[in-house]
Length: 95
Image (cartoon, rainbow, N blue to C red; front, side, top):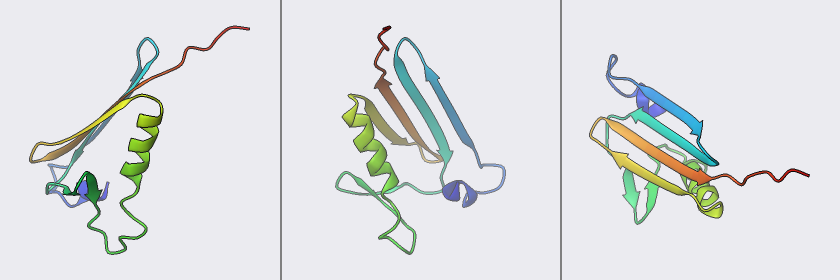
C-alpha cells in the first residue's frame, strides 16, 4: 500500500486474485510502484528508515511457499510490481 501511495494519483492500483483449482492454491498480486525494488543478492531491500523491523515479510512468504513445495515469482514492469504464488494443496482424506 505504501509503494502504491507514492505513485501519481490516477496511476495507483492494487490487484489481488486468490483462487484454488484442483488442489492448487494460486495468488496473483499486482501493485503500482514508482521505482524498481532494490535487490541485494536474492533478497529485497526495504527503503524504510527502520531496516531492522521491515523487509522480512517477503522472505517469510518465500520460506512458507518453498516449505509446501510451491513456487513464487516476482516481476517489475516499470510501473507495477507483480507477485505470483502457486502451492499444491493436500487433499483431505475422508475418515
